[in-house]
Image (tube, rainbow, N blue to C red; front, side):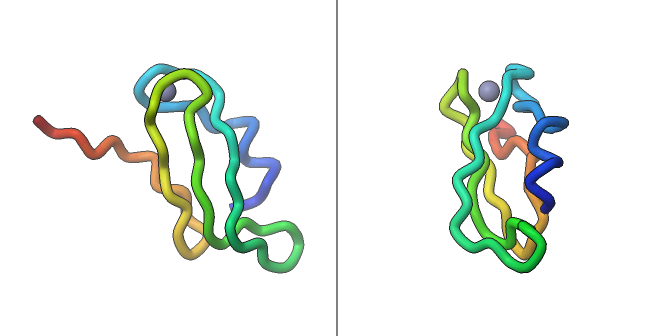
Length: 60
Ligand SMILES: [Zn+2]
């Protein structure tokens, strides 16, 4: 995902901003692997193969 995309992303649980924790950055500042961490709640989302996964995983 592009770094600029971060400003449009919010936590789907609480609608707060996300912190980007990049692990692998490809060409043109594409985040290939990393994590998006909510600034407000403990929710963490993975970025895998350049795709941020913002799905909530608690179905209980
Ligand atoms: Zn949150």
